[in-house]
Image 1 (cartoon, each protein chain N blue to C red):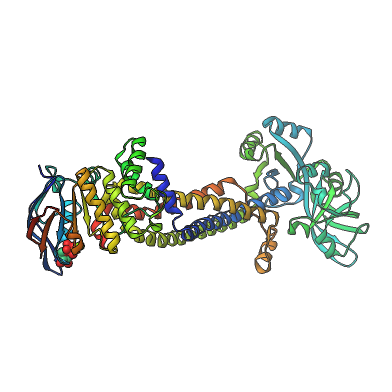
Image 2: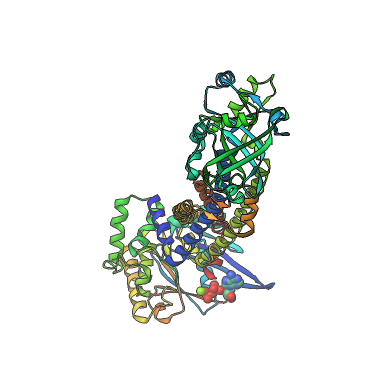
Length: 409
Length: 229
Ligand SMILES: Nc1ncnc2c1ncn2[C@@H]1O[C@H](COP(=O)(O)OP(=O)(O)O)[C@@H](O)[C@H]1O
Ligand SMILES: [Mg+2]
């Protein structure tokens, strides 16, 4: 019996192949669009956050509580094995602890000078987290304690300096001591974040500490958790451990409030677009279903007349709907997968004003797509239910159908 | 007991507040094994009467009994179920499910009744042979001529083993040869198996074959004759 209903439904689906294919394509393309909108929005957000975390803020940092307000050498803190041990004891799931000493200085070439962000780093450890060495386009990264600088390509161009040439750094060290030095440029990096690329001067940690009269001091410790997900719990554990000190734990969210706000608006926009899409899709289906139903009222009337119950008739139409929606959604998910694959390999690059707006904020002007599986099935399910909901119309029609009027029409 | 019986059956349609008496006080009784035709000019109420007999429409007043059961006392669902088991229908057109083959159209109604599969297969084959379509079992309605489609419809109507078969102008869309062929089949089924047929027509050729001719004008029965053929 059920087999027969299914056979009837299946044949009805293919009774007008052209119309069915159009309907299926409509369902499928709405899935593709819906997935694409969401994937782009989520992917771009995640991609940018990932980029910022990896190349700028890290997942979390320990800083003196005054450093955010006043990032001067007065607000650095002493760094040795003891503090690392304490942190590691508080939470065992830390991968890396990256010491850094960051400050703003004046960088000068032969003709020009610019503001620069001088960053004293442990290059080996940094590389393990952010693959910083891979961005070297000229020369090499320094060895620990070497008196050599690695400079962002943007800054090098602004200063008109190349490999092997001398970079002058002038600024303020600890206790207001003046800090200045000349360093040969041993490497140039093309940093993926435009803002950093235009400002950064990397020095070996010890070299920077010496320059800034801050031997043994750092401005921040970047903490790399073993797993991304437990950032909050790690931060919590360390907060407890450092409760009575001047040190604070900041997570990546604390460093990019502006960005996260911007992204919230962006995501809201994506949801709005999806919502509009759903409405358009719903009305589109409704048109098809309306004509489909009207064309078949006579047939429904005959079936009722010969003794097929309304509920059985409804089951058949429901099966038809189910088949069309399901085929459409599956095709759509497959197609969406292809589309997302394509844009995954070739991220969309923004041009013009939009791109500049992003670069100005220090974010890269690329739109990434997300492969998160929930995007596919959530959008698939939403479109499926929209399609099914619209097909409720014939069901209502069947339940109220007057077989005589229908047979006459 | 008559298979179907009416008492003072009336149907009034209100068209633009002008009442149309499609049926007026029709009292009629049809026994098992009859081969009855309802004749009359267009608009005389033939279709309306057949719809009442088949429980497809409800009277304004009066009653219809099928096998002793009053139709207007039933609910919608019950009436549909009742039709499935008790009444066979052959309509003027749009009879068959277009996506089903002749064979499937005939077996469908028995599947709705929930009969045994083996029995359905056997009976479907047998019925299609009887209406002369043993070789067109797997053709879809669109691949059949009008006469062949009506023969499938008769086989389907018969399949459910109803108490009687209602046919509303079954030959109206057929040429003479196909019409006569369909009537031959109906007459043979009536003769050999005592299948009760009630059919409407305004075709003289068809009327000649009937053994009872009920004549209608303006919603009233004006003649009821029996002939030996
Ligand atoms: N649904 C309806 N609404 C209004 N009037 C109707 C309806 N059905 C039939 N009639 C009227 O009832 C009368 C009988 O119609 P019908 O039974 O179809 O006649 P026949 O089948 O003999 O041609 C006609 O006058 C017709 O116009
Ligand atoms: Mg009529």
